[in-house]
Length: 295
Ligand SMILES: Nc1ncnc2c1ncn2[C@@H]1O[C@H](COP(=O)(O)OP(=O)(O)OP(=O)(O)O)[C@@H](O)[C@H]1O
Ligand SMILES: [Mg+2]
Image 1 (spheres, rainbow, N blue to C red):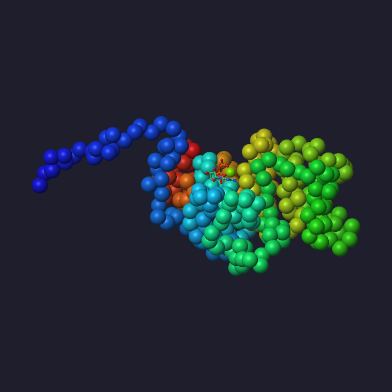
Image 2 (image 1 turned 90 degrees about the horizontal axis):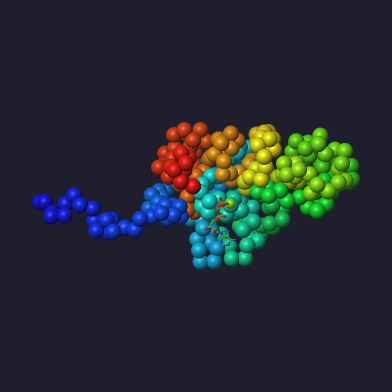
């Protein structure tokens, strides 16, 4: 039977307000978020296994049921529009959200099979195993040497001065900075250029022999040359470390990572091999983002 209104859009749709702001455009798409993350959340050799991760800031939920494996000795990048929860999720991986009073994390995050949120886990050694490099280089107001020596010293990693010196040199070398600073180790770390300071922060993270290094937009304050250096470094570091990097640069994600996770409004929409995400994403939201339709 032909209904009289057949073929017409429902009233609500016709009267729907015109959405203009970028924020409205984003939330308008919340209905498109898949029930389950598309792609492949698992990895054959995971160093971290995250399941059902929710994060709340007070009453407001910022991360919704994220399931994700972080593969050992590879780089995983996290991309998505501003405010979608990339930094919040990254901070779950070494319990940095514990430092935010109103933040609450639910779910399970295992590092080599052990829940890092278990009551007997001490966050100090955890954060040595899962180090962090921030967006803005943040050397301590100390000498270059002391910036790198500090961690090994408080964690008791060197038995004497000679061994400590060895750790400092090796860490600076791995961070690709030794050549530029070896003659001025006693000068302040804050006196280095932005790119050098960021490599100093990477050396500081490496000095405590982490298994995983979390990087939250580590190149956003750097020029293209310093950025290229950090990207080369990330590529080398993955031989020995696992790296999870948040970036707003899709070129950077494509260059440095083997897997890419696309976040949207607090949901992990899609995760897959980086090549797949950038050449043939499975989900429309991912495609819209990587083709620059929003974000
Ligand atoms: N300390 C905090 N207190 C309250 N809300 C927060 C806090 N940090 C983040 N949020 C909220 O959580 C949501 C996710 O923020 P988050 O910083 O993780 O996003 P992001 O993807 O890293 O964004 P950007 O690309 O801009 O860095 C946002 O709605 C944000 O306002
Ligand atoms: Mg962020």
